[in-house]
Length: 378
Image (cartoon, rainbow, N blue to C red):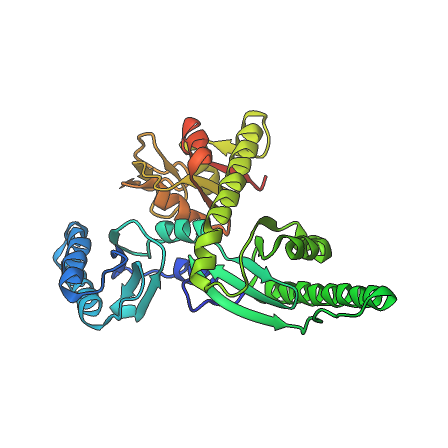
């Protein structure tokens, strides 16, 4: 099972937060800070600007007091206590129920705040989807570094070292035997590296692998990787073994982003083809929201941000872009919803379905067919 990462929230964190409810309200705050930020003067302006929109979430005196409580607690923490070391901060708080979750990330987030009965997770889902964990192995003839990267930074590193035989002045048959010995040693070393990569994947679970090092050694490592690992290789790069973790992350980020865009494009292509061909898929807001309400969605696919106004049943039975007064499932009144994308992600968690947020070419294609879709269970 994948471990909870100290570098940020995991899918386990999302599931836990998705199950949290409180009629007294939950503060969800997403704040972005400049890369060189951290001075209290600059931070104060950022915090006040970010929390100011909370005023609109106080329809009565009781909730106004709760909003003030959460805002004051959050502002005091963010300005006076937090040791800022990330580019963004995500905070979830409900003082009466003891909820207090703070995450600092090295990737940007879209600034926003909400005060509602449950945490706002749609933006966090988009961040985690864009910055999934992947593995990097940097190898030479006698050493290797295996690094997992999560949320834009190096998460864990394992080193492997094997003494590689040096050159010899002997000639003839002795030289040939020594060359074979060196080749055998390199082969054993690369097998050990492959075993190390496999062990790291089992501990931390990554879907993509990037291989770095001299051309010859990279090729030799690719040849000995087990088929399951080799199928996860999305790119290679040339680099000496001693480069810093930060430089490694910077150099491979383009490879990882390209692989993510390609996967998203393939997913959306298959989704649209299946929906138009009568397969187990739907596209467009009303059909997708209807399938979510019925619990038929296996994977929700949407664009971030996917703001779309509409109406929704408070019990989660039904939502639609079109105007309606009552839920067609339970007959109860429906509420105005400012962002059906957020409702869709919440319903996805409630029905245990996956969520995929797409960008680039995939987002353009999906936008052309309504901006949202889903692969169905049935």
